[in-house]
Image (cartoon, rainbow, N blue to C red; front, side, top):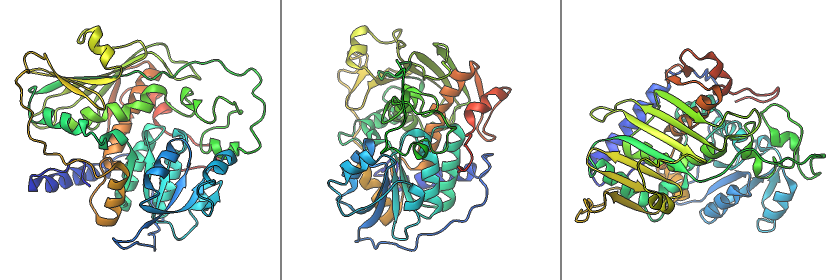
Length: 445
């Protein structure tokens, strides 16, 4: 299914051109994507048949993905580094093969596609291995842990031609609020938009640590849980969820929620790579992700559409100069589009045009973006029938990259002038440490 299915018969053609142009651009970038032995999957289900899937990380978000897909596919393989998780999921999937190492799972010949629902730091290696083995891939958000990984997966997916999807569930929300907001923005309801504000109420950051962490539980293969990142001694805070509070494994609030909330302006305004990124807030901690932070992005003009200044807020920061306390209370997380003729305030499920008295008699345009057939169903449909899922890697990669660049600006303490073609922060070589992936021996993309 296309990113935005339009009733205009030319819309499909235009969307294809946009995707192909992006892929042509990606082919010129400097990620060092070397030649690889692409192994086309020999098993191809007919359109009426069920696909055979393997799941890497079947608990947490993984369990939600498993539940969302199990009626549409044959669940053939489950992989988890924690035996406690596997024990729980096997209570339902008693006859499904279990694995500890996803690389062993990928040696199977019967898998058509793979779902990756691991912590951020292992997204890229698992997704890349699946793509290289010839499998279609669904990967949770954010797509990757580092900027260079995001670009690598974007290019790899384009080179293989396989069908991909990032776990950006709000993009295909059943109440379709995002679609209606996109229609309002693109129809010119509030005029030209050159300013957007995005904020999130999630809370990650410094936390108390167990003074005597001890050894990993016997059921947990901690070495495989670490995967590609540098070795660090076990802590109970890392597994199963609080890893998001640590730079080594995640990126805190922005990494977790940027792909949900900033998806809306990226979609509505057709944004891709920013040109400058500047952050302010609490000084970055060497271990913990940051709680209080604000990031200012500048996106270049697109045709007749102007440059866009997008500001991200988390922790104590909010756009208090633009919204009342009551409005912010009603939108603990949200997006504010500032146009030449008015504003749109929105979140996952609701939207309001501002000032309200000015738009009291406003009639919204007739919907033109078709409702999603279902978040997971979009991916399955693309595999079996062609086309693209709503947030395939050609869209999810640049979206993830932009979010992660905010963390680069924050951790370097410098304004980033981004050369998207060369994947470089101009005049800031110290940024490379946070842009490029660095894997321990035995692991690579």
